[in-house]
Length: 222
Ligand SMILES: NC(=O)c1ccc[n+]([C@@H]2O[C@H](COP(=O)([O-])OP(=O)(O)OC[C@H]3O[C@@H](n4cnc5c(N)ncnc54)[C@H](OP(=O)(O)O)[C@@H]3O)[C@@H](O)[C@H]2O)c1
Image 1: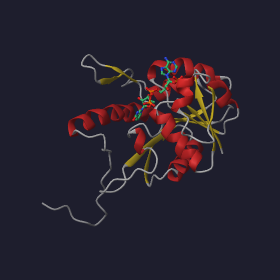
Image 2: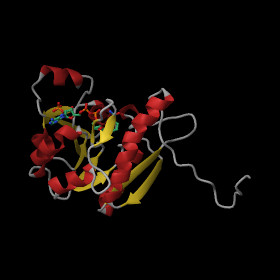
Image 3: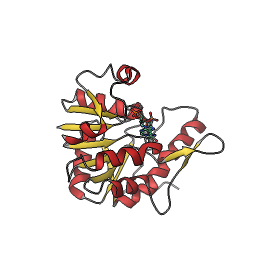
Image 4: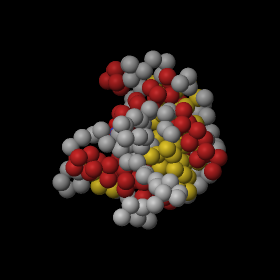
């Protein structure tokens, strides 16, 4: 599949690498495709094309949004008229800004989410929120001794959600929960910020969330 990955940060690079390794044609979008620093950041991604957001969007069969909240508006406007209508747009980003103590806080929430802002700016796409609650390095083949972390997914267009789940399975995710409509991103984005606070409190970035389930019929111990 031809996949556009918007963003050259840790998330964009991890996903581009994982997707290219699975045989997908990956175009990474950036503001500065000719910038030697950007090219160097992506030099260890063989077969991945580095181009403008607009060019990456044009031929995409699926797209992933991995942009800082500062850039959401500008990048969304750039891809809005070039991403083919009906394309699934996986939003792996979190609407974070720096809080007064230097830690991240949500820039939108409660009544809106970054994913819903993105959906309004790119109305022809089907935005699906996913992958935003884990460290970039665990977005592909997440592996923890206690079992797989849980991937929370939500979106308003079921076929796009199903396409996202299938792609995430290909990337090595096994425990995936579809929460329902895109408005649930208001909650998963808060969990994305919560993940940072949890990692800081735990003193390790090697942490991830997992939903524990009690099998039916197994009595709760007193
Ligand atoms: N890092 C993680 O472990 C992690 C985990 C979960 C979710 N997230 C979320 O995923 C998103 C990407 O994370 P990241 O760590 O990969 O981010 P990042 O390195 O901070 O930024 C990603 C890209 O955003 C673009 N960007 C930044 N400011 C911009 C602006 N003003 N206008 C246009 N583009 C701009 C840059 O692209 P160019 O410079 O190439 O144009 C940059 O490469 C963020 O929303 C983050 O909160 C991150």
